[in-house]
Image (cartoon, rainbow, N blue to C red; front, side):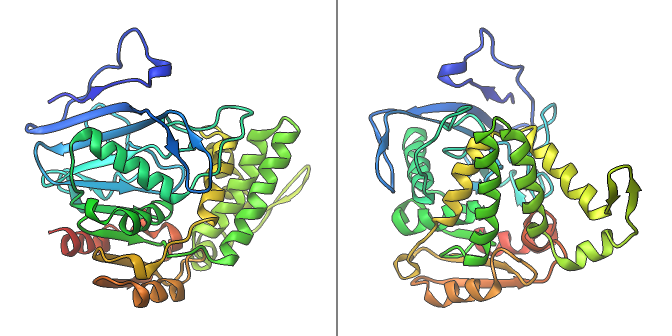
Amino acid sequence: MECVRDMPPSARADSPPPASSGPAGYECATRVQRLAGGFPLHFGGSLGVVDVAYRLVGRAGAPVVAVLGGISAGRQVFGLPGEARGWWEESIGPGRALDTDRYRVLGIDFLGGSHSTTGPGAGETFPTISAHDQAAMIVGLLEHLGIEQLHGCVGASYGGMVALALAERHPARLRHAVVISAAHRTHPMSTAWRSVQRAFVRYALGHGEGQRGLAFARALAMATYRSAREFEERFSGPAEQTTEGFRFPVESYLFARGEAYAAQYRPEAFVCLSESIDLHRVDPAAIHVPVTLVAVVEDQLVPLTDMRELRDRLAGNCRLVEISSVYGHDAFLKETDVLRDVFAQALD
């Protein structure tokens, strides 16, 4: 089996990148599909053309599960031999918690993001994007692929918001939604933190230092992703004196992560999708698709009370799994054993 690849219509190379190999009986396609004919947006306006970058890989003919992550996650959910690792490598793939020997995994690059789906270029202001627009884009892609219904949509963080939007507006396209650390609305405290992050980036863009602003924004964001207990365990050591003053262990960690992130992502895309998170709203009473929710007690961004409220207001069948994790909002990237049970009960 070889993974068939394609390049965006606007950035095709004379020869495609080398194909990777995977288990026998697998199919793999990494492509960019153009959705033409106009793409109306939830908050008004439209895009004339949308190029959606996707990756579909797993056992040939198996049911399809869409897997969506945070705003920086893309279509490379996991890597086959010879490929780069994916952003959810520990949980998705052959024999893993979501087993691609049993399912085909559909990953996408988000609209308005930093990858190969249509999004802002350097210095560009992109239209306001909603999780509902991401869901509509997925539906357009499913139509192209001839997939009538997803066996499941597993969404974590922003991806969970998109999964809820898909369940609300396109229920015939989805058998079951698995939503991790995402609720029916964004909590005002989370919006407070992200508003400051976007202000950093917008100010920096206005002064020609967008990447530096993004590094600061990401550093602040990292402080919200994990738990106070983890920071206590990892960063309680003494400060180091430098020529510029004292530098704290947690400070070194945050800014190192911020700089690494800024080297890979566009500040304009960060502003677009960060705002999309804070605009998120769905009506739980309009969601009849079965939903499995996973809430993390230590999650600073999505309070347990919001997840319980979502459970109580959903119109369809719902199961809420509450876990405790030192990793807070990032628990979905770490708590593989818990997710194995969640995926088995929701998707089998």
